[in-house]
Image 1 (cartoon, rainbow, N blue to C red):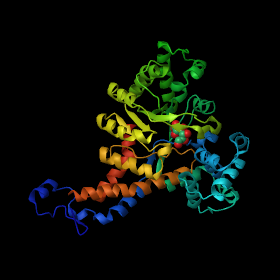
Image 2: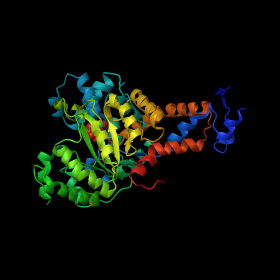
Image 3: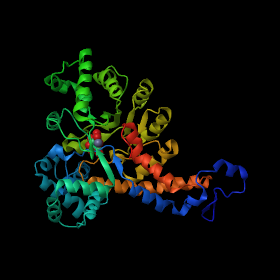
Image 4: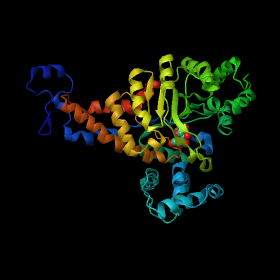
Length: 444
Ligand code: FIX
Ligand code: ZN
């Protein structure tokens, strides 16, 4: 009960209240409710987060790492919006050079129309962050600015602006460019943590088993028993090569488990046992409907509500496996929170892809705090272009601040004082220690 804005914890007349709360949060260092928002904002901005899922790459992986204005403007989120605001056909668009693609998108979404969408505002925010004009007729100035940057310094500056200490990559061992780079041996880079992404293996076995065979693994098309033990050997070898912090796969909305399929078999006989053996979590990103419109390529994926009983079965049947789970469908979010209350080997993370919009992030995050306290990971950026982390994390901090301070106000109203160190602890847990603990990393 707030009295004239003052939290009366410790000073209430009812003796039992006092006795319950003695010793924690004496009023001396408790924060007044009208100060929660500025303190939470301060703590959010002074805590360096771990960005636990991105499509960024360390400099050692060369041109796989995307950065600069042309990549920002041709991000598939904007391509999807471009095809709604232009009569240009996808086929014509793909025939253009990268710079020409960026030019037509800039004209259609930023010159001929007001950049109001979350994705277009993101580009405006990135330009503003570097002090660049945001309303030019063309991209000449921006191109000149980015051309003048040296990558290593630029990465350091961007991570600082975004308030992240590390970005977790998405690394595909079967990618024709990336695979050979890892096999040659790559220096580890603390700012970029590797992840072993298994989509081609688990969802594309029929077209990719030969790649494993070519690398000397005795596998076959039907994924026989020997194939699954050979896949285990493959995963262990790549663990040595890459030192991934987790393994990951993006699964369709129709994902079922157990299922008499190659996916079901490879998961239960190879991936899950190897994750246990290597003490690595498995990240499941469920709910994508791949390529509903292949003409617009990466922008052509959609979302479907998933039946989560497969996830339930995985968590219940494999208690020694840890599952980092993000669901694409808004309609699945409540179930995910409830499953996380049933299974402590399930860590919900992020407001993925089409959910990464303030109105939806707010809804999902409030529900998660109410049902899970701080035992979840609120967000990941999914950045594909380096500078995207600047606006994606700025937006996350802006959305989270009123939600967190609102929760502290409720806690205070209910009779418990809140100190700065409580807020520091909670923010660190949400954006650093939950992930670090699940991936066996030192927490500084
Ligand atoms: O599967 C994934 O990791 C997705 O995040 C991507 O495939 C998707 O294209 C994306 O960039 C979402 O933000
Ligand atoms: Zn992703």
